[in-house]
Structures are given as structure tokens and as C-alpha cells.
Image 1: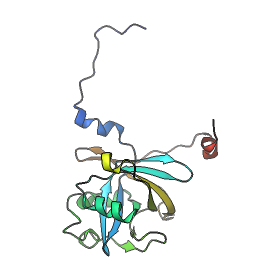
Image 2: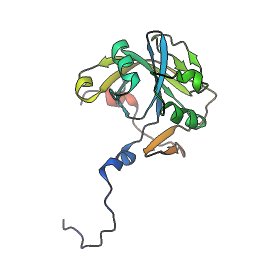
Image 3: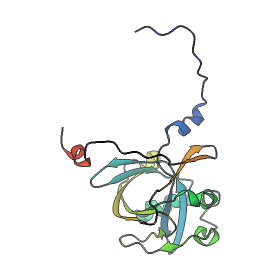
Image 4: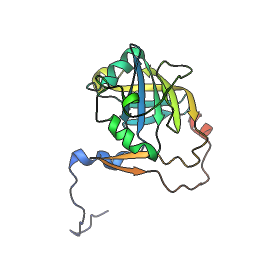
Length: 192
């Protein structure tokens, strides 16, 4: 196949902005417990890795206060906020949990989880209790593999308009939904 003549209308995108094109998952509030103290960190660098058991891969920068909490405790909660929490989510990302109790400062409510010591964030529309399942890539890439061991959803949220970060302070919200016939999840768990 031949390339088309020079009618190229696209412009070059700086590499540091590629993130905004690929980021598709919702921003979550990663909550941890460390020495009896709770912390929250907004995070959007995560991906589903497996259906059963549900595995999530995520990057937590070594520069973040939550990194050591997650590394040492081996557990956390991925709390999924809806659009009504955008201001609190961004505020949580602009201060360090090392010096600020983010639950108190931003009016968020910690609830006891059932299988991990990290708290659920009551105001979020869903909460996923997690344990670290694999640390192989932590020392090189700060990449944790989490197994979801318990999941909660708030039935009051019929339409979960989740927050999606596009980079450089830009956000969008999940919107239009439609249903199409697709294979069942079990199809993907069979050996090919």
C-alpha cells in the first residue's frame, strides 16, 4: 500500500502529552493505612489485568507518601469517586499525606473495610479492597499488581459518572452508555 501524498493535516504532539490520549480508566482514590494513620492519594495509572481473580496493575510513584504504605502493608482500597467529588479528588492530589490528614481536611469519611486495614471512602460510589499479589516490578517501575478481594458499590449511584484525567489539569466524565451483545466474561477465562 502506498502512502498518500503530502496532505497530512496532523500536528506533532509533545510526548509528555501522550498520556491524555491513552488514559481511559477512572481516577481512583487509593487509600492506605500506615502506623494507624489513613491516607488518600488520587491515582489514574491503573489497568485491569485479569478477570478471575480480578487483578489490577497500578503505578504508585516512589515519591508519593502512599508508596511506602502500600509497599509495607501490602494492602489498600481503590475507591471510585463520581463527578461530584472532583474538587476533593484534585485537592487530595495537591497535598502530601505526610503532613496532612486528607480525610479530615477535605471532609471525607473513612469506613472500616472487611478484609484489609485501609479504609473505604464513604463518599465514593464504589470501593475495592485489595491486597498486593505481585511485587516483581515494584523496584524497577513502581508497578504493583493488586488482587481485588472484596468489592462494594453504592446502589444510590444509578449512573456512575466517573472522573477521567486527560493530563495537565483536564478532566472528563464518563457519559453516554449503550449496550451491545458481547461475549460473556467466562469466554475470556478459557484456554485458547
